[in-house]
Length: 253
Length: 207
Image (cartoon, each protein chain N blue to C red):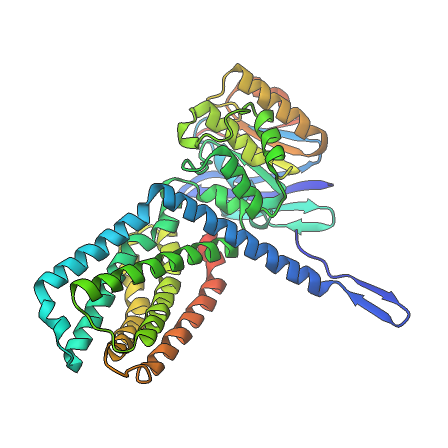
């Protein structure tokens, strides 16, 4: 129900209830978003639709890279570090894509979208799905990085900066893929649209993430990676805000 | 709650095929409308428009609740929708489903209240089974539990007794009669026995 603003006036006292109502609505929205996240996580842990695909893809990629290009991990030249970072983000990207769309696509496939649309606020659905993507990407980033460190023998020069870059890159991937998944779920020509939209949304942050990650692999490269980190955070914030504004139109299309 | 449903000159089509056009009707609390017609005449589409799950090609649908007017897309809290194409989460139990939908609707629903709703639709004792293990009739009963948890003033029922046995049909009869006392019921059906519920019958044309 839409909130009212009401004002009670007493001599010398003006009490407006607009702010508490607005605050309550935000709290309600966040609680609904958390419910969507918990529901999706519970289903994911039971069915493992996304996790299995993502981890398997990441493990296969790390294994193949380790067999074919172990020599790259042993080198510390600028080019070798760029190749290592590129391979890591390629593995992360494709593993993420194989699993991240599941949130919305699974709702479409199991025809539960209507029940969700009728009951849940659009923004809560977006936030819940975004949180799940973020959680899956955090897990995927850690697993893939460990596999690369062990199997490809990647050496991390600035571990803290590397983790920061992984987090910021993961955040930009999560913001992009969540709204992408929502759009392609509602679209008629899913594959074509996905390719058209994914390129401009995913490539720019990934290029920066690769360059930043390569810097963090070098000794003392944390400072060099700072602009990349700032760009990825700014990109994520912009994409997140745009998604919040757009999602209702996508959801109700 | 004082509730009114106003449908003005509503039309729907799929591609170049017009399903129906210029449908106007007004319902107040305590009234039941039955929408009947052949397969493909647009009964389910009409209910989806009322539920805000689909956009009308023309016309306007408005819910008046007290002094506020709502577009169907913003009226989820006013609507309980039961239809063959309403699917709930098969990998969750009945209790988990209801707890989730209560949470996103921001209503308080403890285990006792969940048990009450499930008992009302004839699913007592099956609350901790996953919906994947439910029969089609039990799934239909579960749709009623989903539609009733927030006590909506408007109940939209598309083929209300489909797949239900005799006891299930009695449950639906009880639900409809209870709803008619304080709210609006819209029923889309081909079953001539369900015409008896209608204070108003809206007959849709054939394909």
